[in-house]
Image 1 (tube, rainbow, N blue to C red):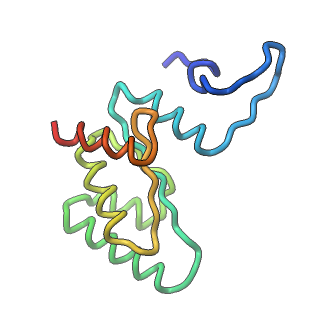
Image 2 (image 1 turned 180 degrees about the vertical axis):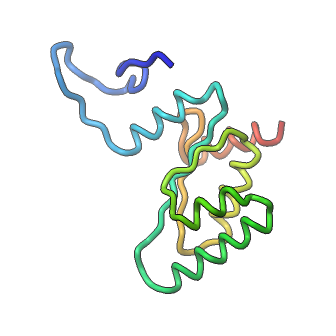
Length: 131
């Protein structure tokens, strides 16, 4: 991969002689998903709140559901509270995303796909998962 700041972050308005650019977390993850779009890599950003026993019960229940759907590798990574999951297969990413979003009240997830976020990323992933 041959990348430059201009190709990874085209929306950054930076003066020609500037030596520094400010980015936020979302800029970086969107750029990663855009850079990997030719390979249909989906990025799930997991949000694990640091709260109480309900969160741990919700996490355990989600892990059990994922195992039940044959997503053992995903379940193991979530049990370890991995913060980013990169999927090489759109269908498995779609399944995991929907299980996480629908089966866990305490754990959040954001989807990044083809440089898109939110509903646009969901539509693109859904289209590729159905092929």
